[in-house]
Amino acid sequence: MSEVENKRGNRKEMVGVVVSDCQDKTIVVNVDRRTAHPLYKKVVKIRKKFTAHDEKNEAKTGDTVRIIETRPLSRNKRWRLLEILSRAAEA
Image (cartoon, rainbow, N blue to C red):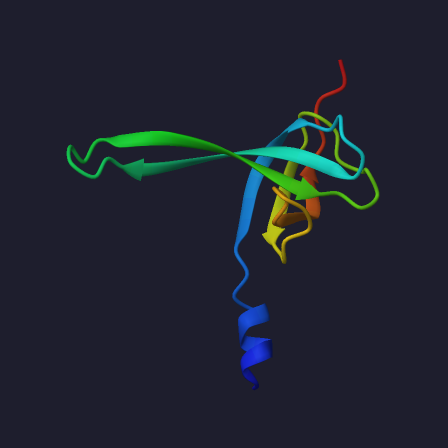
C-alpha cells in the first residue's frame, strides 16, 4: 500500500445538522460533540460550524448529514457532503 492510499484513507468524517443551505453548492453543518473540560473535567457540549461542498444542492436545512474532510475548495470550505442520513421533518 503506498503512502498516497494511506493518507486518503485517513480522512475525518463527522455527522451534523444542516443549519444553512442558502448558498449555491454550499451548506453549513453544525456538529455537536461532548468533551471533558481541560481543568475541571466536567463534560461540556461543544458546537462547531463547518462549511461543506454540496455538488447537487441535495441537502436542506434540518437534514442530518455526514461530511468528510477534503482538499481546500475555497477560503472556508474544507469539507464535502458524503451522504444524507435523515431528512428534516416537513412542516
